[in-house]
Image 1 (spheres, rainbow, N blue to C red):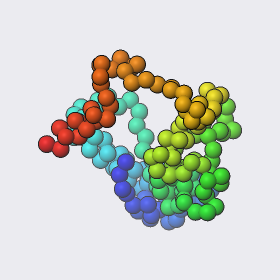
Image 2 (image 1 turned 120 degrees about the vertical axis):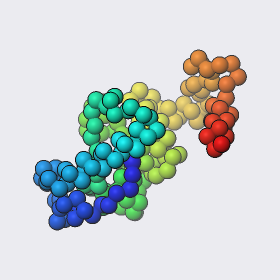
Image 3 (image 1 turned 135 degrees about the horizontal axis):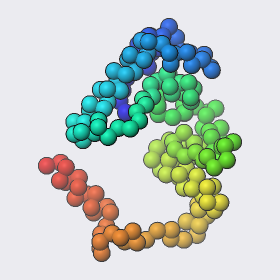
Length: 171
């Protein structure tokens, strides 16, 4: 993910497409700029993971116009729904959708923005998918996972391991 201009003119378009108008996807200037940014992003990843280009089997980039088309987000922002009184709490999407087996989670759902809310929405989406009240189970004290149960070494503690990694990375 990177910051890029959102203005339609930057992408070779006179204005934001109307609802349902996907003709921008065939605009040669839009496609040229989108491809250039896609190449730049892959090149940046290759700086950290040399040779990654040979392992890409499918690539597709989203632009502010993509975000605008699919989410109607203000100016194509990728950071979720606008935080306004009309798009807050119960006015945001829940975890269930009209599509059987498709559940939503993330900072644009009813639990709101930030890491904690995204985590809560994930827990509620998992609960809906499993047909369980995971929130109620956790609040009642049920342990759903145990440290070390996944084959981790005896005494391994994730927070301590992350702190050690942060110290090594800072050097």
